[in-house]
Length: 117
Image (cartoon, rainbow, N blue to C red; front, side, top):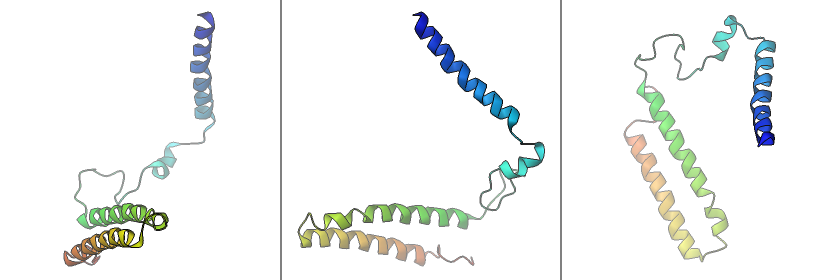
């Protein structure tokens, strides 16, 4: 029991000592506040957080995430080509690509891809 108590105290004390040393030795100052603040969507990080922003930034982000996930779903189609017969693989791949193209056409039709709006 003593060993467990000693080890738990060491586990708690050593990381705290390292954190205090790094805090003391760090060269941050109040002037570095601008560098440490997050920057997203062209907002000034020190202004109000509830200001309206362009919905276009949100739409571009959603489109990027959708196509990023779709690329991750397309990659497994390549190794499965050798594991299945050609017609099954072709039907699945064709259906998936058609769904992507329908989504892209819908986004284009809704003018989500035009940056000038």
